[in-house]
Image 1 (cartoon, rainbow, N blue to C red):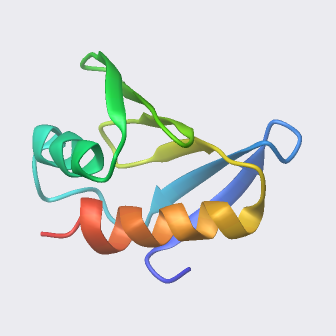
Image 2: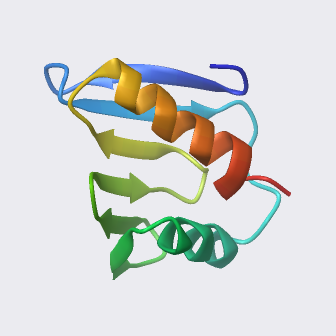
Length: 89
């Protein structure tokens, strides 16, 4: 995945998507974009935002995204959305 590193964690049931660069837009804009993609923000704090939907996700201020997904292919699809749309300037 260009623009991010995907790390496997929690016994292949969760993946961390780490962007090469921190976001240049506000976290609220990113949250809004994720919500428009069909996820519901269930927790908003200065430390992280959590989302419910097809997958559980946690977004951190650095742009790092933790995704509970069934496989690496799904994590790659979420990473493409994250880097290409949600974090896009």
